[in-house]
Image (cartoon, rainbow, N blue to C red; front, side, top):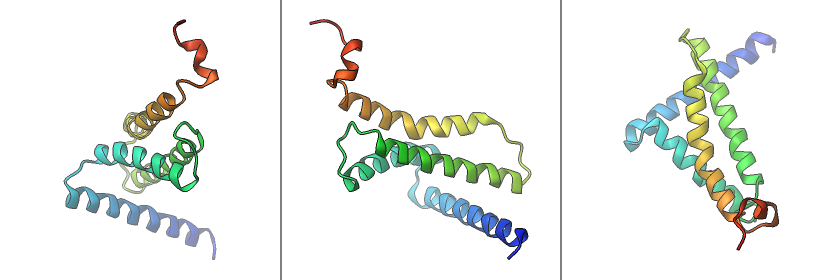
Length: 123
């Protein structure tokens, strides 16, 4: 299979993923941003549970970041396919909504760790 087949397969995957996201929003009543927020937290907790990592572990957060970046790459490809103007603003909002709540959870869980002692007030 040549290059055209590979790019055709990627386009099909991107468009299928977009249809799934539109369907989820339409059937659940949740917005695009709601899904970013909820899935960021749920996937971080889920990966932590599956990998048997403590709540303060960076690994689940890194896995969620990887998935979020793939999702944003798919969104970029979709914009290119449909010839929509693209700007980094919506992508940065999506990444922030996905990553900041689970980051807050991880940082809160690590608050008593030795690496965070320097940020805490003296007792």
